[in-house]
Image 1: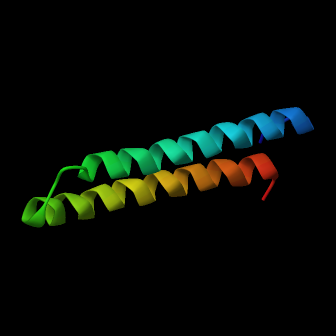
Image 2 (image 1 turned 90 degrees about the vertical axis):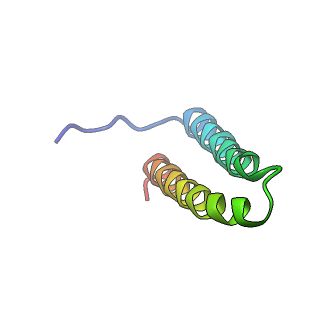
Length: 70
């Protein structure tokens, strides 16, 4: 197993900022995917969009845990 070099405070801050930005992008993509949909069309799209969002948020949380050492 290879050792991962420790990150500097600046690197951690930058990486967490990037993860935060990608989290905002994931939420925006979710919102955009449902924009202008109504009724049945919204209901059908919302479940898949929510699942995609949750998957992406879990991935980003995993990245965040790696950065902060959790």
